[in-house]
Structure formats: C-alpha cells, structure tokens
Image (cartoon, rainbow over all chains, first blue to last red; front, side, top):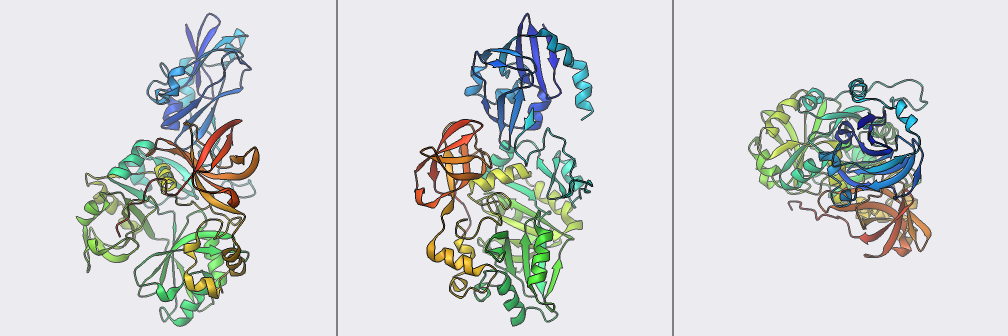
Length: 123
Length: 394
C-alpha cells in the first residue's frame, strides 16, 4: 500500500487498482468543524481533477477533487451520520470514497508524504 | 480542495488587491492583533484588517457563547462622533435627522438605537447604531463600509457640524448569559451595571479604564458592547478573559450566532440593492419619520411602507444537513422566486438555516420552497426569525 498526496490536500492510498481518497489532516484543520459531506454516486466515472465531493464546514463549502481518474467503487456511508469523522480521523476513518483507477500512471504526478509535508510547511 | 464561499479564504491564497486589482493593499492591524495571535487566533483579512476568524473552532466557540460568555474584538468597526463647537445644538440634531431616518426627540441620552444610512434611492449603504452622548452623537458603523460612510455623512452634514473618526478607540463585545456576571466584577460607575437594560448605555471604569458600555450586541444573547481606548484593549481583554465564564470568540462564530439571531449582515443581507421594507427593517425608520420623511431616499421608503415591496427578507430552515450558501437560488414549483443572502449550518439547532429575499406574495410561515445548491434541490420551510430566541435583558 502506498499513500500519495495532492496539492489540493487530498490523500489517496492505493492497493492494487483501488484507491481510497480523503482530505488531509492539515485540510480538515483549516476547514474547521465539518457539518456535511456530499459524496459521489457509486459507479460514477470520474476524471482526474474533477470535483466529485463537497465538504461543508460551519463557515464554507469546499470542493474535493479526485486525484486520479476511474470509477467510484464505494463511498464512506458512516459520514452521513458522522461528518465529524473527517475532523477526528481525516486520514483514516474519515475517508470519503474509493475509486478504481483507470490510469495508474497518474499517481506519478502526486507527492509522497515527505514531499507533502514540506509543501504544507511552505504554505 | 478549494473553498466556494467568498468570505472564506482558508485554503486559497488570494492576494488582497485594490479595486483595479493592481497593487496589493497593506492589511492593517488592530490594537489586539498580538493578543489574538498569542491566544491562538487564526488571523484572516477582514474589512482591511487582520482579524481572528476562530480560536479553538467555530462550533465550540458558538456554543460556548450561547451557554457562557464570549469576548469578541470588533475594533474594525467604525466609531464616529458627530457634534459641533457648541455640542448638540438644534442645528446638529436637524443635520443628523436629515442624514438618518431617526427621531432624535425620542432618543434618550445613553441609549443606542439602530438606524440606516440610505442612498437617494432608498438603497441601504450601511446599518449602524446611534447613541446620544451629552456632548454629541456616537455612531458605530460597519468596518467594511466605514470609509464610505464617513464620506457620505460628511457630504450630508453641513460644514459647522463636526464629524470625528474615533480611530484610536477599540470596541469589544462581551456576549452570552454569563456576560453580566463576568463584567460586573470589573466595573465601577455612577449607576450599577444591573441598571443597564437592553439597549441602554453608560460610562464606567472597567479595570481602571474609561469605558463606554452599552447592553447590546449581535448574537441574540444578553451582553455588552464596550468602547475603550485602543492602548488599553489588551489590558481589558486580559481582565475579561481571566474570568472563568469568558473565552475569546472569532468572527466565524460571530457570523453563525448573528444568523441564528436573525440579524442581517451588511454586504450580504443588506446592500444598496435592498431597502428598509424589503429588508424587514421598518423599525429602523422611526414613527415620526414615516409620515414626515425628509431623509435620504425617503420618497421611495415611504412609498414602500404604503404599498409593500415585491420581495421580502425571510428565514428558511432546510431539511437535511447540506447548507445553502449566499447566492443560491430559491424556487417555488420550479419557478425561481428568490435568492439566499446568508446561509450556514446552525450549531445550536444542528441543521442548516438561511436568510433569503423571496417573492413576498409567496411568503407565509411554514411555506415550502426549494433551494438549489450545487445541482441539488434542498427542501426548505419559511421560519420566523430569530431562529434561536433572543435572550435580551429587558
């Protein structure tokens, strides 16, 4: 399993051709209290960089872009009742959706954990 | 991930520029800037200043204020003093009445009153508070509009009426059911703090500092607004936050609190495109002025009073958890009938609420509308405002 990060503050953990996507702990901290998560439809075909999910906080709504192209394989149903999981477990239980990758080469454009950390430090 | 709401710049690094978008404008600091940073405030640009949007988190700060007491720094707001060399004269009163739809004959010394600065067409340029002091009229106007307001007022007032921007004065708000208990420990004055009822004010010594304190605010809770010299702001803020009931609260919770209280926010729910009657602010035009007129835009405003307006500012409570945001369209039977001007998730009610301007003919309590948000149709019902009952000390 390998974890990658985007400049838009999404993480994706890849196992085989299945990627699990969420927003980073840094991102949830910036957004504050998450009150609602709008998740994509299972089976939807998505392209790298598409806005596929929206995270609502008390003060604003933020797009979540899929870092890879593919098909939505699953969404995190627990978020319907517990959107705050995105705050408390951003990079584990607060994952948003799973995507079956159509082009694994896209992962090459993403950062590893160390690179993302220095990216965040530079903000 | 990118934030939609224009007021949130959390993850977007916009440079702040002037209206032409050419030169970055210097963001100014307020007397409590270092104090906020020391307290862990997350500072954002607001109305040209660095201001704390939150400390521990909007939800927690909001609920703390509803249950205890929150200290808000609102020093970005404009404090203005209108008088003359002879103090308040009939000419000064006439000049203020020519500028605002207020009846000064009924304005007692010390009591703040809500008023509106209107343009010649009756459009709202700002909403503000007017207090009669012994020496002149003290106005508090919105931060983002204060420079324009000063210009507008200066044009409206004759030359022998003076207008001073009290830009060395800080303004704090202490709000919540325990605000009185916390504040009372630190004030001395000619009158006991307990004698101040809602919308009354008086001079006090607060921690040894000269303070003008009124029992007023923008949260719907009992509370106080406190004007003090800027150089004493940190001292007073430390004193108040040293009380167990008090925590510092940021602009984020200020916005969610005022929305629950049904109080409009200038630049969002009020603008030059809105006026007194459609904004549901009839009370801001005092009774005598409704018959006499004689204030900017009074022809239109009096006509609106007589005939009503095609649309009206209302409250909406949404089904589900997805919030409607400013700019979302309101529909009735697939027909567009209005627009959301403020919206968000209510921490107290745990559901989304919104203010909107909607076709007045369709509005009644409990009426159903649909708000379109990001391609989704959100069912919403008309609700009486405030969404959360006011708890003023009357």
